[in-house]
Every structure is written in C-alpha cells, then in structure tokens.
Length: 205
Ligand code: 5GP
Image (cartoon, rainbow, N blue to C red):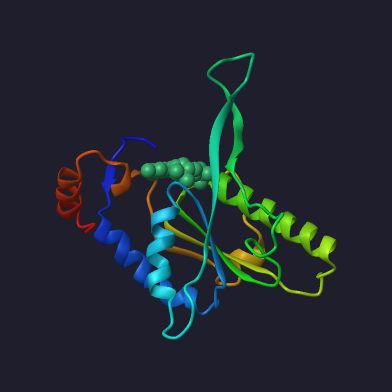
C-alpha cells in the first residue's frame, strides 16, 4: 500500500452490498453460514435477511474467530517471514445437533479478502474438519460444498490461494473488487456521525 487512502464504508452501504450479493449467493442454496469474527459477523447477519425465503427457516450462523500474527525473523527484525493464523474461536463438533456441516452448502463470510491468508486457512481447516467428521460418522457419501462471501476483495497479489472448486465455480462472491486501500468499516469507528459523513462524501453510503 503506497499513499494510504482511507475508504469510509457506511452501514447503509454494507447493507446494500449484502442485498446485492444475496441474489448470486441464493443460487448456491445455502444451508448454513460460518462468519469469521469480528468483521464477518455483521455482514453475515445482514446477508441472512436477504437469503430468507418466505415460509422457510432462517439460515443459521456459526461463528469462528481467527487472528493474524506477523512472524518476525530472528535474524533481521524488519524482515517479515510470514504470518501465523491463530484460532481464537472454532466450531464444537462434539454435538452433531448444534454443528453438522456434512452434506451442507456452507457460506463462509468475512468482511475483506486482503492477503487471502485468513480465508485460505478457514477453508482448508473447515474442509479438513468435514472430512474427519464424515469419516468418523460413516457419512462420506454426502457432498459438502463451501462458498465464500466478502464485502471487498482487494485487487493485489495474494499470499495464499483458494481451491479451484470455489474460485472457478462462481462460489467466490466479492460484492466489490477494490484497489489496495485501507477500508474503514462502520463497526470499527468511534464517531459514527463523522464516519457516515465521510462515507457519504466518498459515495459509499
Ligand atoms: P487477510 O490478509 O487474511 O485476507 O485479512 C486479514 C484481516 O485483516 C481481515 O479479516 C481484516 O480483519 C483485516 N484487514 C485487512 N485489510 C483491511 C482493511 O482494509 N480494513 C480493515 N478494517 N481490515 C482489514
């Protein structure tokens, strides 16, 4: 990121992006959402409103928490050797009534795809969990599908890749693909009036 230009995004704008993306996501017939916290929580909740079909149940939302920590090489302090993803919250598979991913169409929700490290970790770990659970329960014949929804995908070289069965099948949905600027989301701000004024001025309301 060179000159840091901040993009202010209002709650209204987030709402409209979820509404718009829901049209595509509905085609996937989602059974369940997994929101990556904290940024994925509010978009997931809004998305649920637009995925609801009259007469059917609300789509459940499960939460996972992931944080990125930069690994600093011991030789040269400045040199970043990579990042480590740390689980701060995960799914509890001990009760099949509360968490059953097998045979489901699952949408993983986060606010932004920046370096792609977080999404890569979430997808590979969740796919591994599904394989292990299916084997344990003898349900390997059931097909589980993952898709991804983010509000923003930053157009930049990524540090990790997502599987072709998500990227090449229309199961990666980014409401907007944007330049590599810092995005200020409304839930992070202290002064919501000022934030919204800035968002309106930039056309993101
Ligand atoms: P990743 O690099 O793994 O794709 O993104 C990791 C996390 O960094 C995101 O989930 C998000 O919390 C944070 N992040 C990356 N870029 C931005 C940004 O422009 N704005 C905000 N608010 N968070 C960001």
